[in-house]
Length: 149
Image (cartoon, rainbow, N blue to C red; front, side, top):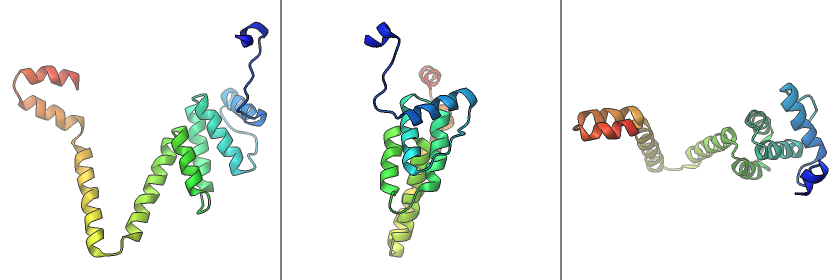
């Protein structure tokens, strides 16, 4: 590789400002630079996710959540999904749930939506503990399966 021969590394898809903020965050654990625009935060979340700096991604998520509006919601949601920004993705999913409840017009539709949510919760609540209880009630062969869970 050329980088190993001359001791340098060229990063073409990240700005000097973003790289400086990332390095500063790695050294002192905070962002001291003023990020002037939403684009700065977007560049930073891309860089943080590229270099797998999860705490910085979380800091960017928090800032971007405050900057979301009707005009940029779709763009920021796409960026969150691309960067694997879990907190921001959950925030958008929550917004969609609220939007579904608001836009559901008839009582019948509202009842269907609430029933679907309750069923989803029931399925989620089964969890590992319930699986273990099921296995404990079964015969000795299930004990082998219990150790796998």
